[in-house]
Image (cartoon, rainbow, N blue to C red; front, top):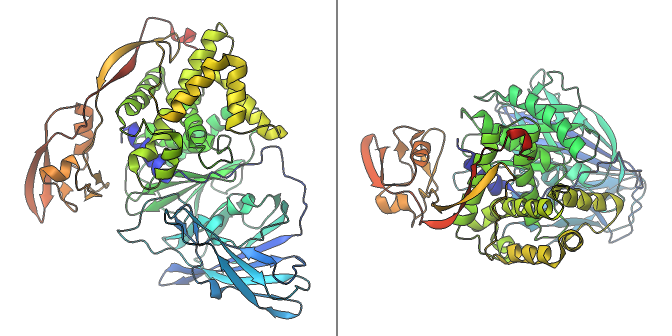
Length: 568
């Protein structure tokens, strides 16, 4: 799989990235919360998970919100769709509840829901309901990997759609327990906070932002003990353990760069029958997707894992339109820090950055203002890619300006780390905070270049964009646009009616005679190509040119500067 494809997969699944507390566990301010998860099997699969949430003496008054669980969170439906199926009781007996629901969000991004008590609570309150894995159909849209799904004899999903939580009183002590008595022998339960019974003091997103997985789990290390642990249910067709080992070593390097000790971290992999997307960040963790039986190149897997690991530090500014920051910095440092950590070579760094530059120049949505990118993010595939393409090229531009202004003494790193430090210390962690840093270091010219990027106007990318080892040259660039996706078994899906493939006669459900043929066409470069298909058992040949229009831009070529002087 070409590296550009994992970047596209990330864009399809980007949404909420839960901010991680990096300076140790916060002090408790609220009463204890206890969660008990009991998966129930039917026909050799998890049918439901009985959920019991116990609130220690919430002292809720009549009309207060007791607990909340969204109907939709970042396109992922709640594991509890029937609001009336949640019940509660306290020391006086059953609690009558009323339900508030937000209006339907036409974008499918977010719809919240709350349960209010009809009388004051007495003592502890126990909440019961059943969480049900999502039913997946061919029409299911890809999105962030938050939804609850069954896999084999297990399940997985995000606490954001599984666990009902009180809105206030955080951080608080939390205890998570599992009842796996109905699961196969050897079943294990894990989440982002650890394996088995867990006690911790966490903010609300320490539960909502955690991933949960139970079943006959595979893990690295095998016993699930350690500061860096990977979990999966279905063994993949690639060397996941090697990739996890390399990312664990890089995680230590990343932690040092960001000025943190390497806090415990967990990686979850879910496997689906068809396209699974990229990954989604969580609390000290992330979930990434894999397709059953699909082979994946090591570079593609490492890039995906590095990107999602970096989201542990690089996430939203608390502003709806901050993908330019969260995905721009993360994609930039996926390449820069992967090279510094030894995950990639200088040639791979050059190729990746040129791929990003080409994508920036050829994406027809690169000229969209940032607010419009956010508005179209979940409805327009090209707009969805802009933060992953324009964003990292912008941060490379800032890096070049910082090096030039300081005679090589300062980097964009200094600005990024300063903004992250503002988050830790209660400073101005915002777009305005970034602009203030630019003004201090680069003056009004630096602020003007930021506004140019945010407005979607063409960026002036300098010749030394990638440092002293590379020089800029003009290039005619085109984007690979077949107009359909190919599953790992060669089946054509998501055919665009006006795309090159559909106009040439490709149909949904066709199969490529060679499942790798599309990658070969992209690698061969622009020009007319012939694609061998199988349709209803018959051989079909399609001739078309799967490339977009030519655009003028730049690429960066290697000069004779020694690698040790590159300063990546």
